[in-house]
Length: 314
Ligand SMILES: Cc1cc2nc3c(=O)[nH]c(=O)nc-3n(C[C@H](O)[C@H](O)[C@H](O)COP(=O)(O)OP(=O)(O)OC[C@H]3O[C@@H](n4cnc5c(N)ncnc54)[C@H](O)[C@@H]3O)c2cc1C
Image (cartoon, rainbow, N blue to C red; front, side, top):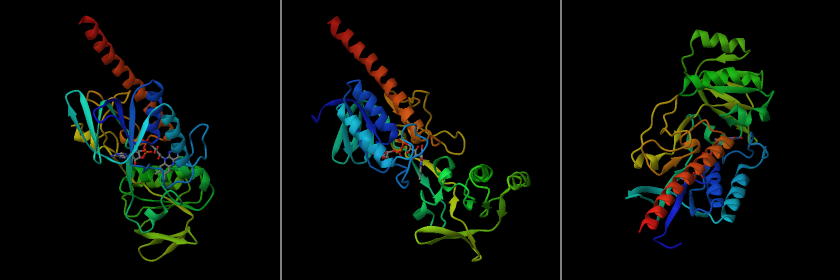
């Protein structure tokens, strides 16, 4: 690529959101570079569910296909982390290592970080038998001895305790220091779930599989999978570097975007996927990437028409 080339779009983040946008814009014959640090959120999981036509696919395979498809339309995929962004007039300048990418528009699709509870073994078992999302993993652990371990967001833990009996009636809710009021306890018990108070010290793993949950007093209670409630931390440093601010909407504050993914107050900047919608599953993140791509296309077209008119008037 020419050092001084101004691209139509730089997409930061090559997960489902970013690659879908890349494919749409590549097919629209726009010049696009995707910068990707290569650490998608669902990397710990071996299978992806809930994506029509791809149920059970290895998540890494979906992205490998996505990269190939985007590249076939001329999209450049640049491995690395974007560490900074600034404006030079109407141009957005994105820093990646020693390289600076200049573009007319920017799509931030950098996902989020799951901040897991500090319980021994949870990080190592995450995505295997320490789970966060029953829609992603519940069916695979159906009818087995399960647990919910109370986390820092009480509403999420209580919700999991009420929801997960849908997959297994053999469920224990370890409150792990959470204050759970009498009304919630009544609902959870009515769902057939046993409530165990007291702190959880760690997960007991044998032969590479979860065997039990260990309480702080040393008691071990046999379980085959546990659900935890991570804090969902948007990787929105680039958006905030441009001046965007998070707004509290629900338990996880995010930078607000309009229904097309345009970032409020940031001309030429869009965001899609988990970075601005922590609840988005893969198919939703991909959909948001597609929507943002069409909005970016419309924005570029408007600017192209203005340029053509100005040229014609000369
Ligand atoms: C264990 C687990 C299992 C899951 N299972 C499922 C499932 O079965 N079905 C389902 O629908 N959903 C599942 N999910 C949710 C799924 O991971 C998200 O819906 C999806 O990853 C969101 O896509 P995204 O494109 O927004 O972000 P991501 O897939 O996280 O992609 C973001 C990309 O941006 C890159 N990036 C971040 N910052 C930078 C930067 N500064 N510069 C360059 N690149 C950067 C990252 O490295 C990453 O490659 C699961 C999540 C977890 C944690």
